[in-house]
Image 1 (cartoon, helix red, strand yellow):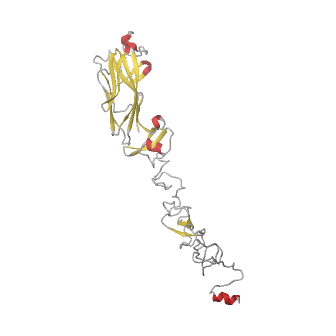
Image 2 (cartoon, one colour):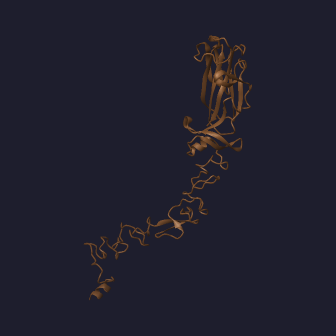
Image 3 (cartoon, helix red, strand yellow):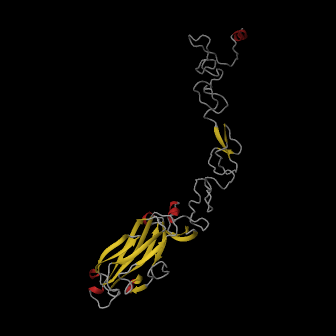
Length: 339
């Protein structure tokens, strides 16, 4: 009798099937799997794990009855051609299980070279080994094979230790000194003259003198008075936006309100009226005889200015109009940096 009833209703019967339910007023609609959804809503009324709103799992079935199979649950597998553990973003497929020679990340920028991937160590070769779109970062300037454009580029790579590095200088890899601490760091040394060793050939006039305990200077007693000391200094082709110049300006003998000055490309960075009669330094060099007329003084010049040119014209001078044996000036400890 059970078999006849099942056949007459065109419903498959099973001894272990849960009893079907019929909602009041829903003639002919049943919930065979008793999952709370009638047969007109349930896309599989024989499986109580499949119904509208069910959790979609990776099983090649439409668990939530939305018409899509395994949507949002399959994994994207990216082909790892060089076996370095990083996938090719342009070659992938979606699958529930892991695909041979494939990984879940798509981070490889060269899937034919196992030494190029996001976990690789950057080397000094002009290539982007670690796939961050920057070549030689962190190692630029450490070898002749990968000179940096400037000390600032090296600083921006994370190297904050003062020292000698390789940069492009006039088209050639050259060792320069980098200051990674002063005024936010990244300064490239262009010139350092203590007037004792290796006087830069660009100085005019190139005459040196010795001023007692202050030592050797460019210009000085009986050499420079109403003339100027100049240097049209080449900056090596190093890209920059700032120029840092420092020096010591020495006024010797009879300065009575005369002005000493230092200009960079015609703009003053030092412009000071000097009266040596008030100097606490006393007589260090120059005319002998003592008294206010033979006192000397030193003045610190230090300036950071905006600059982008290939060279800078340094001019040191005074408004003195007498003999260099009566009053004179000199400069010493000149440093020029760019960033």
